[in-house]
Length: 85
Picture 1 (tube, rainbow, N blue to C red):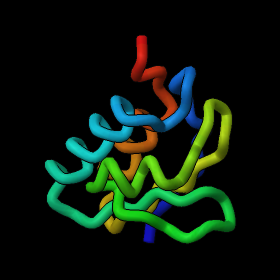
Picture 2 (picture 1 turned 135 degrees about the horizontal axis):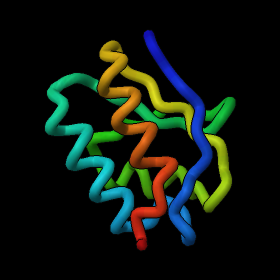
Picture 3 (picture 1 turned 90 degrees about the vertical axis):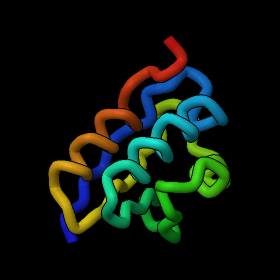
Picture 4 (picture 1 turned 180 degrees about the vertical axis):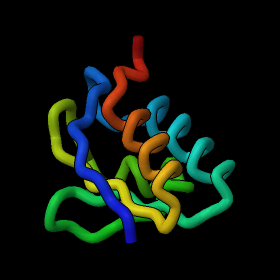
């Protein structure tokens, strides 16, 4: 399964707003997507609540995985972006 590791770019981490934007994009992709802290258990990227349970602060490494590489790239870009700007 393709995956990539990126650092959280949002100033206050993956809280409600960034998590909702990521979840919306993951659901729209139509393929399963997971997020995980390095060495941690993966969560469904289509669920904002599950994303928030990661507790990922700015600069924390997150692994984005999916069977679809373009989806991995798209979600990884969102995780790395400052979605609070």
